[in-house]
Image (cartoon, rainbow, N blue to C red; front, side, top):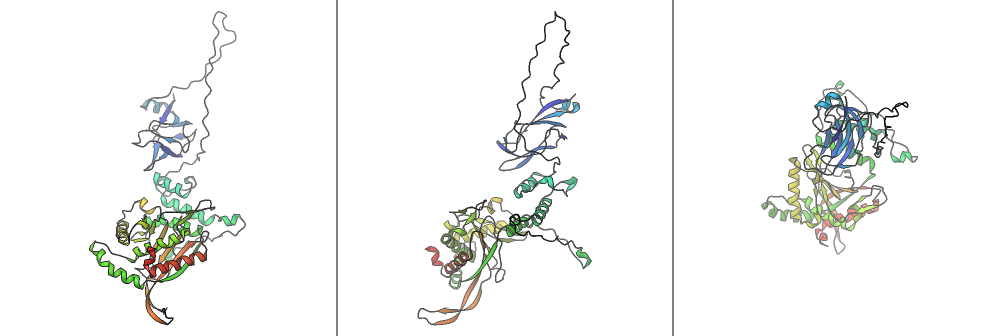
Length: 441
């Protein structure tokens, strides 16, 4: 004989008021013992609640977005006789059919039976429809898919027993990006109509080696692709005369080295950028999700691209406007070491308002950095070089002089910033770098 069992949230530690982010079953589904029923997410972890026994789901008692804790009702489960006898948890009362009505020719001496009406069941609000296909994926992969807005039920897993992996989610999102027309197409514009990616057997042409991408490159690849496609990038190029600034940096470097860190040009770049961002606040902003307003930020958290053996990461220097050049140089050294040692936390790379990508220590003359959404601009810095520059003296006389020129590459979101503003920004930034005293004004 089957029975109805109340399935409740088990002991989940100290978590309370945890959000229900996924409902993996629906009424009528048959579930195996230990099969996941719902997924919960707190600010620290994502967890699946398994079924305590095998049976059929009779009624759901939670909805997406509900907050639950230990002991909260999840669903009613009709267990088989064997499962019911083995279950240790208290069972709900068995539901039996109503008694058959008495025959009309009942004995007159027998008292008439009084029918006691049963209370009508209180209907629950409709529960979000759950797909018949229940995807098999870990909580971390489910969270990754939600952040990208991808539906696991539409994917085929390549992992063991069809388990959906993070690579499957990334491949699915990339496929959607290349196949779905952009918003302009819906308004009458031409879609991308990209040809299918060529599939070649490269080994036919010579020796090859298959090298897996690092985890960082896999994670950043989808974001970089999204940013490049969805943000209309334009790059403004300029140069800054840093002859005096470089001389000052070298003179001041001895004091920092005694304290165990190097006074780099990047620390001065951060101070100069903050001065320019104050002058042009639309560069220290984000476009509202609806695209109707610009969120101007009153704080200055500067992201700095750091090259690591596993790929590029962008830790954030918070409240950079409140720190001196020595403080910035010391913090840059610390976060760079954490990045190379793979010890950065997710929070260390969030909240940036403006980013700087410096390739000066490697080389190059210019490049087009990709904007780190939801920011609206990023500054690329290449290697400084000594060049002859026509310098005009106060008396009007001019001559060529050797000057140390720093290439600047400013990529900006053209929906927010126009070309004239970008040119003014880089011109002003160059003037600050040529005379760092301007940062004190």
